[in-house]
Image 1 (spheres, one colour):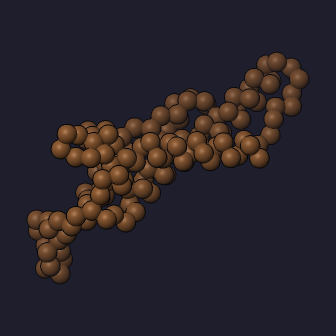
Image 2 (cartoon, helix red, strand yellow):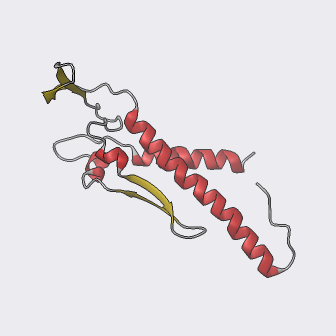
Image 3 (cartoon, helix red, strand yellow):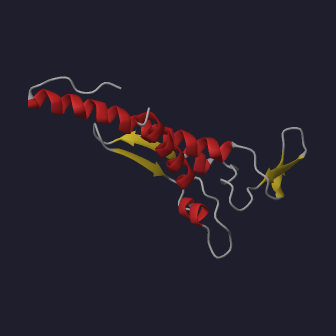
Length: 134
């Protein structure tokens, strides 16, 4: 990553915003990727029989996540509802459409947490810190 080289103040500010925007964008989309990857990985929770049958006429099953693992994908609603976007050159936002997303992350009185947001953020921060410290 280059450091601004212009001497005049107005040019340096623009160049700095461009560089900062690149960092924010990489960070933002790294978090999105980490969240989605954690949801699709293998799980070790209970296996449940689902309604309906497969195309081959066999029963359908779902392997849930164990407490402490990222949630297991079933319908794909949580996974497909995760969206990262840039609001401006230096501001990014991640939205999660599933109304139950925070319950999975933090748990409820009926279910232990299945964290996937905080680990994604922590991993992205670690990656940024390694890049800056080289």
